[in-house]
Amino acid sequence: MMPRDDKMSAAESIVKKLKQPDIQLYRKIVQYLFLATVVIIGIKFTIFINQLESGMVPTVTRPPGIEAFLPISSLISLKYWLVSGILNPIHPAGLIIFLMALATAVLLKRGFCSWVCPFGLLTEYLNRLHKLIFRRNVKVTPWLDYPLRSLKYLLLAFFFWAIVLKMNAAALDYFIYSPYNMVADIKMLYFFSDITPFAFWVLAVLMVLSILIRNFWCRYLCPYGALLGVLSFLSILKVHRNETTCTNCQKCSRNCPVDINVHKTTGVISDECHACLQCVAVCPEKDTLYISAARRKGVVKPLAYAIMVCLLFVGGSLVGRLTGNWQTAISNNEYLFHVKNLDTPFYQHNRGQTPAYNKEAWLRMMQKIRESGDKRP
Ligand code: SF4
Ligand code: SF4
Image (cartoon, rainbow, N blue to C red):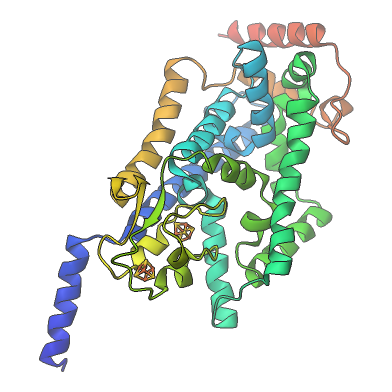
């Protein structure tokens, strides 16, 4: 039988938990909600493509959320929008989702990485495996860690150079309406469903490295995370520490998944901070660690943070729907045509080059296919 004191402490801890819900519980709920959304999108898109492959006009709607997995196309769309004022109708949802991710970085630090991104969630499970194997969190020595961290910025710099600096309005327009871009989502699905041995082994190596080295992909290679990290310096919110109540127990730093020395700072200024709030959750001293706009002012409760992350994405998709910038303009009949001809060189993308095509003739042909579908009984 449990001693009376233990019974009391168990009851007290339950009451305490109910009064002060676990910050990480909110994060997990949000992460799994986004994961469930991604799974539903994946299933719907797979059914959509299967129906096209069987030669029928799909009975399910293509889920626009699939465009979240086309970040390069979305970056091209963003520049095209900025230079031409046109929000292109090929992958409009991709641009909206991309803008929402950038907005989270500016408003809520890199909350996208630890509250929304399914790869962020996968990374957390791989980190658990790491701890199970090594029985502790192994830190990469700084002389190796810093150069490796720069890799993701090199990748980001490459995309910045290739898209933002090198592509003019005509080149952007040419890419956006190209056969390749129109089927980029289908190609992405085939990349995973019909994976080549080379791609499989690359992914397997990345997986193993992510178990051996915590956050390997996010910390060293993800250019999306690098972009959000740069923008997060603009964020009005950051984790603050109250020096007067801090007992220097260092629990915050020991629990930070990206090894930030939270106990040594009064405000976390780091491109690596994912706003996961694990440091805030483990701090035993009340109101000592918090996320806020300024020191002890504008403190954002974790629940409010969770709601803001969700509202940004739900709001973004609503604005997209209401303004007619969510569903692609590509009709199901056009998709049928694309899937039938997907293996032709016309749809390939060799070493960064879109195959030559006559844009006017191509779009005229697409319009005819669309209209022929509209006339069907
Ligand atoms: S500093 Fe805190 S919020 Fe930022 S990554 Fe580390 S534990 Fe998460
Ligand atoms: S966990 Fe809290 S009390 Fe301990 S060092 Fe960090 S901020 Fe200070």
